[in-house]
Image 1 (cartoon, rainbow, N blue to C red):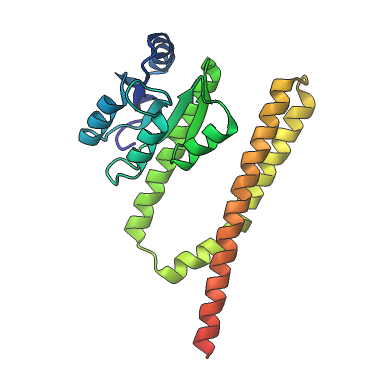
Image 2 (cartoon, rainbow, N blue to C red):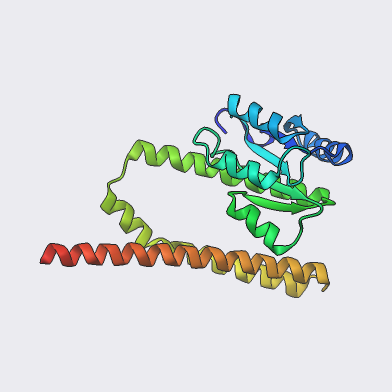
Length: 224
């Protein structure tokens, strides 16, 4: 977010439910965010295409004129808008298949209605923070312009670099779950954290192994 702090972020909320819109707007404006509202997918698409300077889009899955997942896929496939984080929101399509379809469409998160204020604020903060880190990293990479060999070596070491913070995350969540009063909600949250951490570990391990294999094949080709 160039020139803006996380709390000054510009957020587009797309939802045709006036009650839901009022709740989301009230919560986020109290956090200091600049909120823009749209109640149809077509209006949102036109706005974002002309003015892609949004830091986050909160997008309802079911809209009167389009499907939010389809709109998400459209925005993520456009080079001019693909950088904008999108969190899908739904009170009806809450099954695993719908959530998976949303994430495969490029969504950065999937929240279920009714949205709790703590969950909404946490997701917004986390998404904005990660987006800011990506922008910062992209700027560094662009300025440094590393060579292909150097990039491969960094990927080859990525798994080791990520495993340590992931192990810390596992241990911290485990300690918290043992010390906090047990409940179905806590157990579900803990399981969700472990599941996502495992997904990250697998993706990073796969990238590292592929980079190592490519480096080794190049080394063998060079010897030949």
